[in-house]
Image (tube, rainbow, N blue to C red):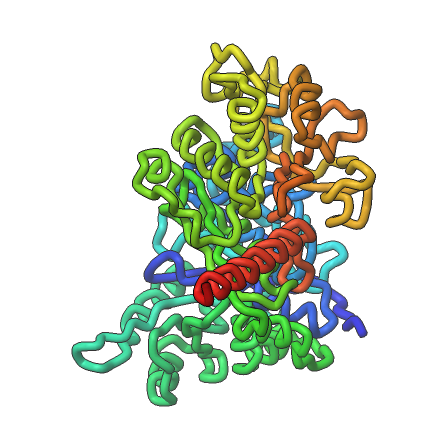
Length: 550
């Protein structure tokens, strides 16, 4: 039963001391709990960087770019928001300082300010507040995460804006949750509260008094430590919440619920809502932690493997595939450059599946091609995503269709066999930011194909982020050699899915299925891939047992 809230309420999540404390997971977890209690909740991320969006930022610095249905290139935290709440978000849910400043400057050039001197206060802060309030209609609660840490100069306009929102809306309609670090000093065996005190003091200097503290700590917060934190930060003791490391991020809602964070929040916001026990979520977490059907080993071969966050949604999609099959998924991140250099010869013999994720540029491509060739020839389940599909096409052209030197024009503009080419819609594009094929597009699946069986449907919609595609001039060659173009755009103009029918599991797609996978609703491609990997693992065990007897 949905609760009735007369006015939209706001929850602001900030962070202090250091970055990476888990603001996104905390916001997403709270959103999940409040949704379970019958409330309509949406989440929003404010990023203080001047880039308009993260689309052109390095994955090594920023992690993956998460794409929404409407084509917004966003921060990876939006992936957490969607996965935890099972809600699709959009352009308005991810806002950068760059976009705020761009909008204000556009208005100034248009003359909207009637000759006024444009300043951070009120013009920038008013634009931030407008973006906040834009999400209010239809929602009981808007949870907004402020990127960066307290003290960052770039974050100050956002902090000032949320201070004003509290002033505008009233204390019962806007609250502040602050994440902070409580380090444990092993040499003295003691938790230190000073960083938290200083962080809160910085917030208070700009007019924000936190209502709730989420304290990241290696050790449990004893009652004395919680009382000390409460005393020096003016936060009630029931608002001092412990956040320790857990086995899986999906445990976080359960931990926050155990400490009654939702009760504290709803009391502050003066909302009455039915209780929840998160029973379904708890069962899902148990399947993640204690699967009953063994383990599969998956090799993810990519160019950004030094930073797992660059493939955050792929990682989660694989975990979701494990949930669907009640198996543990052990992921090994393999640098395609290392494999290319011969450092990992015969490396994939111990794995049950190979996945090639998305990416841009020619670095490490030859290593990916070598890995795909090994998987194709040795019957290892293979899953290619975006760049993974393009690499599968190149490998097949070279090694099965005898097109020596076949390549993508992205990697070799002068290749004799351009099996991957620039999309027609991209021919006249000269700028990089926000100009790719982005967002949700439909695809038609071939009747009787494996991918149609996986989806149990012939018409699907998936999210995209790419400029290059399979060259249609080579489609007849590929299909004549045994490679099936099993998914296309509705007009047949773009190849969306390829597969090998005589292989245990060999599927690659141009879209990004990981962006639609949820822990309580695993994406069918990830579920099917992990099922095939589990079958491979069982076969390997059988072969090993037979070999031992012989």
